[in-house]
Image 1 (tube, helix red, strand yellow):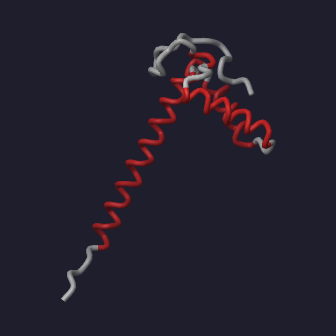
Image 2: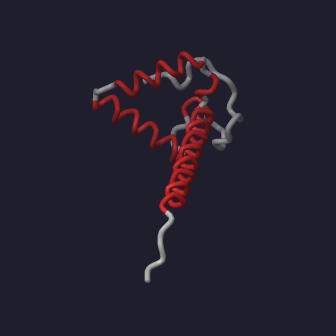
Image 3: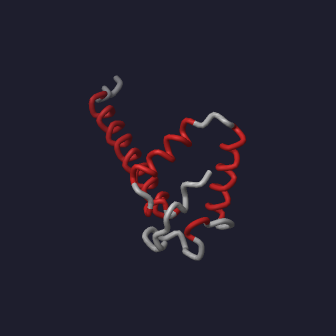
Length: 101
């Protein structure tokens, strides 16, 4: 005879895992904002820049942003946080640094 499965318990475990993944993603996005120096920007400005980026359909612009982001993660181009070791909060505040396209 087969052992019966507790579907409610399995669903609860999956929901908990989904919650943990969402929390990790939010934390990583916050760390990314800090590492790029964008935490020095006004929240309205940052939200507007992100909305503009999300709404852009121009593949050339997106590819340029992708290359710049990849270079950032490889340590080749730090942009507004040059000279740091990607430690959140270690970059000096600068105005308008990460908002350029």
